[in-house]
Each structure stands twice: as structure tokens, then as C-alpha cells.
Image (cartoon, rainbow, N blue to C red; front, top):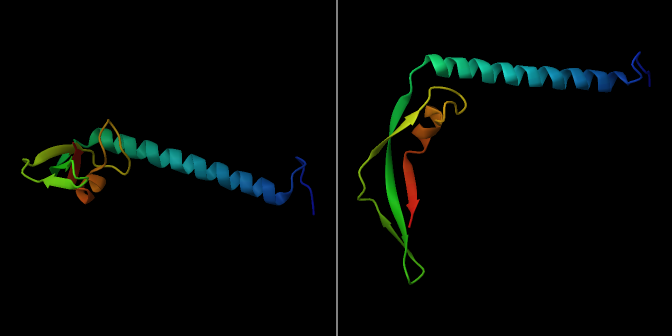
Length: 99
């Protein structure tokens, strides 16, 4: 096994470079996503909440007689500005409320 100038094996040096490149790439993608979220207005998705009520006989009772709500979301890959991404909210259009 050959040792490089810094006293590390070539494999460790390459692994460190790949890991550093990956970290820089993820940070750059997140920052670009944040800039896109700041320039895009917030969206909204209709979400149907429902109540899940625990009864005394250890069963659950569900009440779907709740009006539909609009949930704010951001057009991005990750959550930004205190809002979840719209792609996630569109896949989760029901919201369970425990009582």
C-alpha cells in the first residue's frame, strides 16, 4: 500500500474529497432551493381534517364533519419559511386531530 505526501492512503484521500464534494453539493442545492422558495410566492393546498376521538370502551370514533382547510405551502424541495413543501402536502391531504 502506497502512502501519499500527507501520510494517508490514496483511498482515504479520495474518500475525503468525495465526502467533501458531496457536502458542498448538498449545501449548494439547499441554498438554491431556498432562493427559489423566496422568489416564488407561497402556494396552498386543500386539506381535510378529521377528529379521532378515544371512547371509554377503548375504541376510536372518527368525525369527518369538519370543514376543509387551506394549508400554506412553499414550492420547493425542502421546507422553508416555516411552511412544508407543496409536493409533501399534496400527498398528505388529510390531517388527523386527536381528542
